[in-house]
Image (cartoon, rainbow, N blue to C red; front, side, top):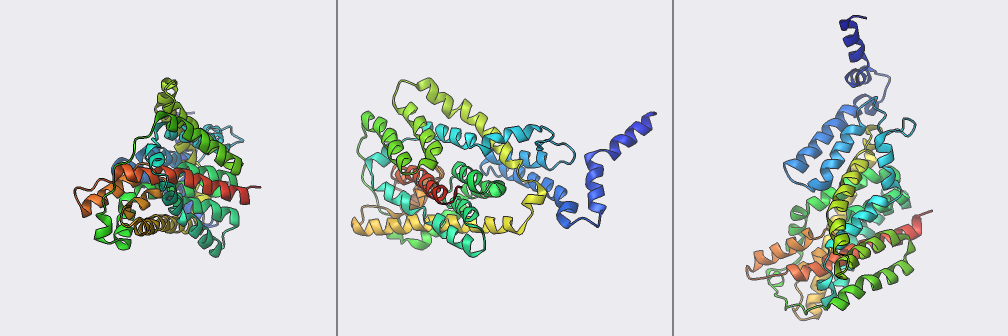
Amino acid sequence: MDVLQVIKELILNSGFAEIIRNMGDASLDWVDRFGTPIMILLSFVLMYLAIVKKFEPLLLLPIAFGMLLCNFPLTGIVDEAAQGLIYYLSLGVKYAIYPSIIFMGIGAMTDFAPLIANPKSFLLGAAAQLGIYAAFLLAIAFGFDGNVAAAIAIIGGADGPTAIYTSSKIAPEYMSTIAIAAYSYMALIPLIQPPIMRLLTTKKERSVKMGQLREVSKTEKIIFPIAVTVITVLLLPSVAPLIGMFMLGNLMKECGVTDRLSKTAQNELLNIVTILLGISVGAKTVAHDFLQLDTILIIILGLVAFAFSSAGGVLFGKLMCLITKGKINPLIGSAGVSAVPMAARVSQLEGQRADPSNHLLMHAMGPNVAGVIGSAVAAGIMLAIFQK
C-alpha cells in the first residue's frame, strides 16, 4: 500500500469524514446531521465565556472541554461498551461522589460565624429558596414529570453541586443541561440580581446600616456543624452525603486539630474533583440528547427560578426590615441564594451604591451560607418525594 492510499484511508476513516457523511445524509433527522458540529461550536462558545468573560471558569472550562470530547465521532470515549475514559470518570457523578466531595471543600472554606451571630439569617436563606418551588410548579405546568420538574427547580438555589446531585438521582438524562444552566446563572449573578434588588427596594431601604455582629466563640463554631448534621440528616436522610460532607469540611476547619486535612479539602482535593466533575458533566451533552426543545425550556425555567429566589429573599428582607423597625437591610436577603460568596458581594455593592459608607458583606454572608443549607434541604425534600 503506497503513501497516498494510506492517507486516503486515514481521511475516509477520520472524524471529519464522518461529520461530512452525516451532514450529507438526507435520511437522518437534523440533530443527527448537524448536531455534532453545532455542539462543537457550542463548546467553543462556552470556552470563550470561561476564558475571556471569566464566567465560572473553574467549572465551565472543564464542562466545555468535556462537551467537545464527547461530541467527536468514532472515539468511543463515552461508551460503556468501549470502556471509554469519560464513561468511568462519569461514575463519580452517577454515584454522587464528586458533588459530595466538592461540598466538603466548600465547607472547609466556609465561615458560619455571621450565621451563628445572627440566626435570623436562616429565615432569609429559607425565603431565598422561593424560586425552587415556583420553578417546580412551572415545570409541571410545562408538562415535565414530577421528578424532572424537581431537578429543574433546584437551579433556583444557585447551587451547582446540589443541582447535579439532585438531577443525577432523579433525572440523570437532564443532568448536563441542568448543571450548565445552574453554573451559568451563578456566573451571571452580578447581572441578574441588581435590577431585581433595585426594583423591589427603595433607596432608603438600601441605605439601612446594620450594627456590628457579636463575636462567635470557637465552641459555637465547633458545635454548629455537628448540630446541623444531626438535625438535618435525621429529618432528611436522602441529603446526608451533601450536608454530611459540607459540615465535615467545616468541622475540620474549625476544630483546630486537622489543619492539613482542611487545607487539602480546600485546595488540592477540591481542584482535582472540580476538574473531574466538569469533564463528566460536559461529557453528558451528546448532541442527540442535548439539542432538544426541553433544553431551551430548562434554561428558561432556570432563569425564572433564580429570579424568584432573589426576589423572595429581598421581599422577606423587606418584611424583616419592617418588623425590626429598620434594623435589617433588605438587600442581604438576595444573598440567601447559595452562590458563596458572590451573592453576598452583590449585596455589598448595591448597599454601597445607595450609601458609600454602608458595609453589608458580613451581614450578607449569614443568609448566603444559610442558603447553601437551605438549597440542600430543598433538594432533600424533593428527593424524599420523587426518588424511587
